[in-house]
Amino acid sequence: LKCVQHLVKEEQFKKTKAIVEKFGAPGSVGEILQKKLLERKDKKANWVYDYWLEDMYLNNRLALPVNSNPAMVFPKQAFRDHKDALRFAARLICGVLEYKALIDKGKLPLDFARGQLAGTPLCMEQYYRLFTSYRYPGLKTDTLKVDLNAASSVPEHMIVACKNQFFLLDIVANNKQLNEAEIFLQLEKIMKMSENAEERLPPFGILTSDGRTEWAQAREALIKDQANCDSLALIESCICVVCLDEPCGIPPSDTNRALMMLHGGGGERNGANRWYDKSMQEWMGCVGWCGIVVVIRTGSPFRTVQPSSTRALPPPRRLLWKCNSHVQALLEASGDRLQRLVDNLDMDVFAFETYGKEFIKKQKMSPDAFIQISLQLAFYKCRGRLVSTYESASLRRFQEGRVDNIRSATAEALAFVRSMTDERATFTDSEKMKRLKDAVKAQTDYTIAAITGMAIDNHLLGLLKVSKQLNMEKPEIFCDETYLASNHFTLSTSQVPTTVEMFCCYGPVVPNGYGTCYNPQPHHIVFSVASFWENTETSSAVFVKALNEGLLEIRDLCNRSATADIKPPESNPAAVMTNGH
Image (tube, rainbow, N blue to C red; front, side, top):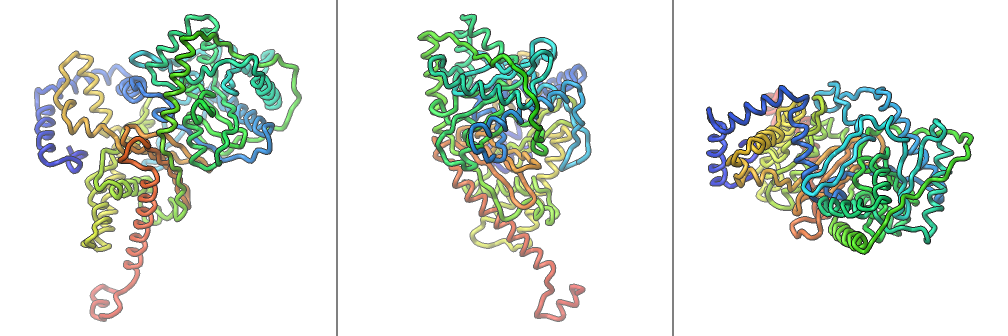
């Protein structure tokens, strides 16, 4: 009730309040569902993990690029030619293999929380699934399969995509892992093989960019042929997919690099040079654009390995596909749908250079809470109201913990943004400052509640899922228009901080929304803002302009308030005495 009261009309809230109170009354449906949830808690390491995975990802029928798979864009590299790009790719692959070796030996150093409640040890289970999981498309729901025996079951291999062709890169030869120089030579061979037009096959990777049901149907058509089954089996069991992209002839801005990472620019560019179901995809452009389509821990860049001797190795193998007229029609339809998604995405990567987290810390405020309030102010400037907002909160303090939601559109944030946009100048700086501090405190308190398992979204999801499992009629609370609106996240946000200059990006989660990711650095903040062109209510450029304005206005407010605190009144000596100066 506290989360929604200030976001809905009074009449609607009264109706919601009655429904909520009825749901929570002694002997009510809510009490029965809560009891069942407590029973589940006793049987499971993590009572919400399966529910969350299904609801957040597997049941979602939208295409993975833009809608689901986030991308991490690495610092731009200065490649002189394609050999430099391949050397970097070889180094990146070696870095991945070193990292995987740590995982396989169970020697990954334990992560500890930073930010709020710093120092708590965090669950490491996600890392151990990083190279062994694969998302299979399904007609109604996807399946995430994790091969826990992957290290022993098949020879270790990667898949390299180049010119929309897929190649098998064995990373072990004669029981010895390939070194960096050998990987480089194999990548060179792959590049040469991909240029052979006579052997070129249709762009099968484009199918994985489609809606999940469409891809599941296409996969059923593919597996009628053994050659396709064999190729799929190799992709589905690989460590990761490495995408070597063609130059795409567009300026190398951060925004364009983000777009290429998320969707490859469609079938005409590199959109088919991907395999979106694999949870680990590294991506490399010949002009120094690179990144990764899954977020792993970021630290210092991969170390340079000195060239070493190379062995005579069997050449990499092209994956073969059989295509008939039906499959050809499916490829064309998938390509058309990806192009519509590409044309619809309105992305703006914005580096705010005026200040970063050091200035915010000097105000004795949490950088994340401060930035979240700034996003609320930007949205209010654009639309004159606040909306249901999602900020992901890590639950890794718990075993198998993933995320819950920090609902950043608090009543305190609304009070603050109203004071900042009031054209009648009714609020003094000290009133605005008090409201800013109240908003930051409310945001910080909610963050602490969420990361310690005390937020509302996972709990409500759990109650809803239990009611479905009991084949109950859907409880009234979950049909209420306020509940439905509260789960329409017009603003979907996430902080992804890194120690090196890189940034994360993803699309909006609703058609009329924004997807906003940010990376606070000491003296600047990188934002990626995404929306859809088709929706007339949103514009990434307009949002970025409002965000820039708001961040400057809040800085000015903080600076004026700091000056007012230091400066003694000048004119009245009596006032000076009473103030104790």
